[in-house]
Length: 173
Image 1: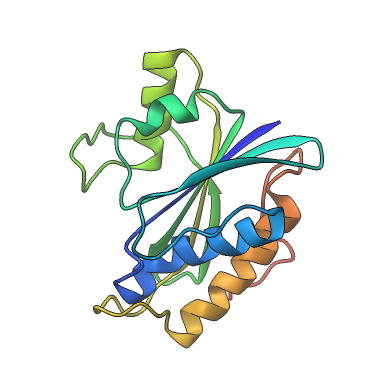
Image 2 (image 1 turned 90 degrees about the vertical axis):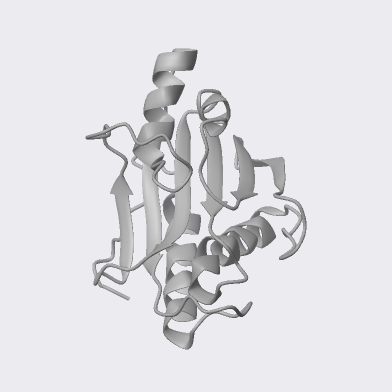
């Protein structure tokens, strides 16, 4: 399987950096280089248990990611959210609307564009943690950090599994 992990958000805005944090923990576990807080958006590829794994960090989703997504079997989208649920791992379904501006482009839209423009829509999972503060600082709040650590464990256990990642065992972090 070819897996692409895309983390997005702004690590200089506290919990908006949750995806960046999780990506770096995955990179550590998989033997990939860490992505710097102030550096250019990073990407790299490695073989993990016979699978090809590529990771990327971007500030926000954009239409150009559709080409990257069309080249793999599965995509994980890592980010923070502001809903009440602590952790979300959910399949990315077809978009209900086609938002194409930089601040409303969704994982579903990126995957739909991969299918329409490049002929292949991979399986996708939205993997997000609840954030609490989004002030200017390069640290996560303690509760969001704990949720990120739990998410990392779940992704390491299931990202390459045939059925994909899940929140099992059940429980909200």
